[in-house]
Amino acid sequence: MNLTELLPASQNLAAVRRADPETADILAAESARQQSTICLIPSENYASTAVSAALSSTLTNKYAEGYPHLWTNGDRVERNGRYYQGQANTNAVERLAIRRALALFTPDPENYHANVQPLSGAPANLAVLHAILQPGDVFMGLKLAHGGHLTHGHHVTVTGEYYNAVQYGLDETGAIDYDELERVALSSQPKLIFCGATAYPLQIDFARIGSIARRVGAVLVADVAHIAGLCVTGLHPHPFPHADIVTTTTHKILRGPRGGLIVSKKQFGPAIDRSVFPGLQGGPHMNAIAAIAVALKEAASDAYRAYAAQVVANARELAEGLLHEGFRLVGGRTENHLLLLDVVNGTNGCRAKNGSYLAAQWEKAGLVANKNPIPGDAKAWLPSGIRVGTPAVTTLGMKESEMRQIARWMADATRHADDDGHLEVIARQVAQLMAAFVPPTAV
Ligand SMILES: *Cc1c(COP(=O)(O)O)cnc(C)c1O
Image (tube, rainbow, N blue to C red; front, side):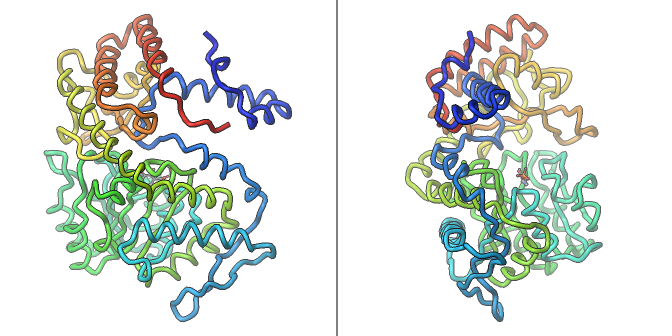
């Protein structure tokens, strides 16, 4: 079966095909892959057709170095702060995105600041470090193998190379070890503490970390890239007012274009704006900023609130199904949108030699997830875990009954991981289910 033939050929793809059939073939194959497999990667999602359309708008042609505002004595003045002419519409769309970011993320927009220009989550985090710290300054973040992000001080990144990064971790139950965090903060006296994670299935106690940060005089940054949509809908405690600065990606649970946001208490606004531009970046991607504006409007809707609640309900159902089959979950459960499986220590056949092998075999069954380090892992390239999440499948409209089916397929694909023929049978069943759940049209 050639799946590309089943897809509606959109006008955009036809335009690419007329100019460049080779690229068009790749784009069509990717759409077919997304249509026929189940996306369980918790950091991925399907952007709406409106977001994709804004992304391919004429704003991609425009240079807009600078901001739609200027800073005078710590106050943001709505006066053109761009370097080039022709900014009527870039200013309008960036102001709209800023206004929506403040309305969605802050309790009190007047006293907060938003920067919508970071090109993605990693540059947003680097911009914050660059705004607050001097090279060599001490900051704290959660260890990568315990669920933290690379940019929270891992030594392979610039955040670990230019700054003096001190790491904290999880306790033996799989929860953030808040006592250790406090001890490390008291002994290392960081100027900044990062909280937030990329592979952490439990809720984060922002209030507790906030009180530790205040005790040592550190700026608290909450990186909610994964859980932003849960925080703004009340399904996870909100980082404000405990955090001073919040960073997020816009393309994960927020379902926007690839991009980053920094929302902060107002006093950090001038330093953050300077740090993003001219400190780290050149011209902002105005087409992405327009698409962020669209995504933020969508995220403020009742439909999005219902979506976020279903993401959490689906994750719980998936966790229950997987535990029932014999999988072992780091932390034992989920309180958000994701689950971290310890695939080396499962029972009832729900185990494998490592996460890399199993994730690759699962893909043959149409189940697309990612290998992930878990506590105790020494090697990030041969980890013992797999991370799965429900933001993407929930966008498609899947509910609890599909989660139970997916849990059965995951167990089946694990028990028969060495049997490619069996995996292919599952892949056909997966494609059949996916035929009823069409992702929004993009290209
Ligand atoms: C995904 C993620 C990032 C990085 O975002 P990119 O867009 O990949 O640069 C940063 N922090 C956390 C917690 C993330 O999950």
